[in-house]
Image 1: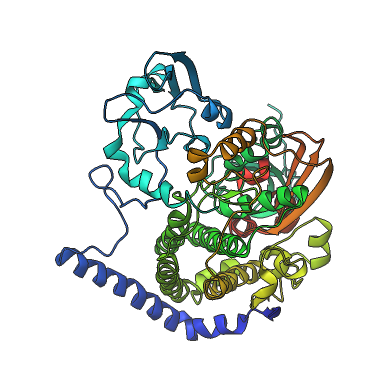
Image 2: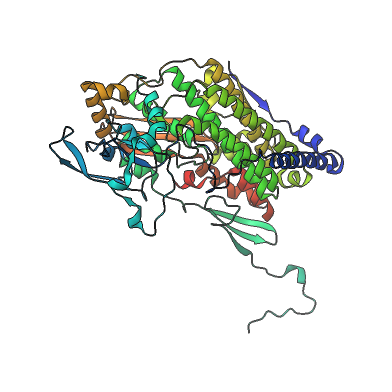
Length: 181
Length: 403
């Protein structure tokens, strides 16, 4: 097993051109027309062969590992799972998370009074999800954010809370990796 | 009016002429990335070329020094944004050298697969853009379609195509699933098919050959003097490939060819990149065969986060989780340099540690920067039209060059 040094074959390129470049032209025509007719046939039978996707009407299927914007997991009672430990705030390289913790007399006594994510700064890196010890902040499949002002990109807790059943796919994906060490 | 009067009988062919100053870029379509080339032209002939870089400077190194070691990974994605995985791997290897840890075999194989898939994407972008700028729009579309397939591999591994953030100190963000090898083989078959079409359409074309052959060549000694690495140097006949001369990860267990050129012109650079893509695909195939099931992360709670399952259940792992995230792994005092073979050449990371959780100094050796400085020597004395293929083959990536 070793790396061998080979020289690239320039002579082969000359042969590809042929007399006056006619063979090369014909070969090129063959390639483009093959693609054209294959795409045309795909369009006729309703199975397009091209990779173009008409965003936003349609979207490519996303893999299970896909990282969209981070959201807070809302439990069935509508409350957040987050206990405001602040690890995601520590882990965030761009400091886009801001948490103000508070306490109640409930069973889970700590909760975030304020949980803001500045989506204008967030780069969807997923380090917050990796740091979270409660499975409370996860990367959703959502990517489309738009606002008329920068203030509109600052998402608050009520906007970030997402019902757990819409995040099943992501949760299942990250749970696959849980027991690996 | 101070008009020069030509006296009758004077040699009109030897009139004093000023050279034309032409600013190519920074937002010229052919300077993909933001770079300005100041050309002084004598007709079509280039007298002097000055390359101005720095338009995309974001302070990568300083940014790394202000965060913990693991927080720099998302930033390394944005160095060479066409092959982000290679930067991820390079930075992780530098950190692991500093921490003196070695990752498990499966992790090494997955890192090689990620790097080689990235290399395929990088070269496809470079060659496709070159074809586009020389007028072959269709060939560009085939290359981009093939790149989609290469990106699908990365997408499956890490959930993103460009902003990968996949590699971690002592492991990977996540393991690959059981159906991963099948997907990779299918995607590589797509790449090979489209690459064949790309070749058939472009390589023999007389116009393309006219633009590429004999342009932009520099002797190997001069390239070495300018610090040029990667396909540019290999096209000039120097078999310098980090994967061959200083094997890292599992490259010493793989069987692959290092293509070199003979003339060192743009055509050789093009052919070297093409062959490298085929070799990358070959390497990925070998990795899939040799890879076995096993852990991808080191079992060291001081460096790598413990498994989440344990964090939920046990106190010790929960403490480790808090310590690693907030303080970061503490590096021993020292300095390391680790280079990997990137899409454009030697990608190196130089880290100096003062014993805290943050690097005291992080320096990135970017191949694009060294390669771009050879650009002016390559085009001096050539024609204006030669700037385009030469710049395409230099393949300056703004994010990496300007950091």
